[in-house]
Amino acid sequence: MSLTKAERTIIASMWGKVSTQADSIGTEALERLFTSYPQTKTYFPHFDLHPGSAQLRAHGSKVVAAVGDAVKSIDNIAGALSKLSELHAYILRVDPVNFKLLSHCLLVTVAARFPADFTAEAHAAWDKFLSVVSSVLTEKYR
Amino acid sequence: MVLTADEKALVSSLWCKMNVDEAGAEALGRMLVVYPWTQRFFDHFGDLSSASAVMGNAKVKAHGKKVLNSFSDGLKHLDDLKGTFAHLSELHCDKLHVDPENFRLLGNVLVCVMARHLGPEFTPQAQAAYQKVVAGVANALAHKYH
Image 1 (cartoon, rainbow over the protein chains, first blue to last red):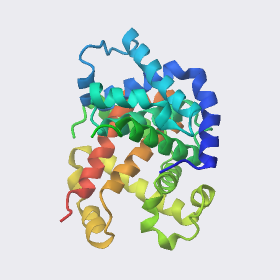
Image 2 (image 1 turned 90 degrees about the vertical axis):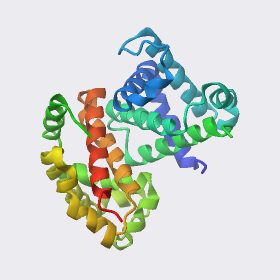
Image 3 (image 1 turned 180 degrees about the vertical axis):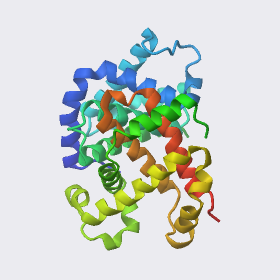
Image 4 (image 1 turned 30 degrees about the horizontal axis):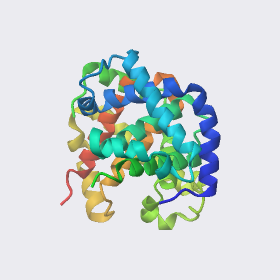
C-alpha cells in the first residue's frame, strides 16, 4: 500500500495547519485514546495520565512530532521512522492493534478542529497515511 | 456494553444536534471513499469512481439516510440493542452477506463525522460514550450470525 501523488499533496497541505497546533493535537489524541480505550493505559503505568498533565503533554508532542517526521519524508517513511520502529519492536512492544486505535483518535481530533479541511478525500488520505506509519512501526516485530 | 446514566444523557443530547439524514449520507459516503473495498456491496449504486462521485451519489445518500435512521432508533433502546437489531442482524447475515467488520468500519466513520460536526463539543468523554454505542450496535448486528 503506497501513497499516490494526490494523497501526498493533501497530507502535506493539511500538515501545514495541523503543525500549528501540533502539541495540543497530540495531547488531545492521547486523551481520547485513554478515555475511549482504557486498556491502552496499561502501557503507561509510570505516567500521570490526568488531562493536562505535563507527561501527557510531553508525550503528545513527541507523537505528533514523529508524525511530522513521516510527513516531511513521505517518500521514505520507513527510513525516517527506522529508529522508532526498532524502539517499538524491541523495547516498547506495543500490541499492533493499538496503532489503529491511536490513528482513529488522531483522525477524530483533526476532524473536530478542522471540519472544513477534513473532506472525504482528506479523511481517506490521512487514514491511509497513518496506516502506513503504523505498518512501519510494527514491521520489525517478528 | 454498559453506559452510565451520564453517558446515556450525553449520547442523547449530542444526537439531537445532528441532522441524521445528512450525517447518514456523509458517513456511508466516507466509508465507501476511505475503505473502497466496502463498495463491494453496492455495485448497483452507479458511479462510485471518485470521492466527489460517491459523496454526490443519490443512492448513497438515500441508503445512508436509511442506515442512520435505523441506528437512531437503536439509540432509544440502548439497554437492549441485541433485541432491537435481531431482525436486521439476520438480514445482514442471510440475505446481504455482510462481514460484521464493516459495521465497525462504519461506526468509526460515524464517530469522525460527529467530531467534524460538533467540534470541541465532541469531547473525549463524548467520544468514549459513542465508541461504546457503535461497538454495541456492531455487536448487536453481528449477534445472529451463523
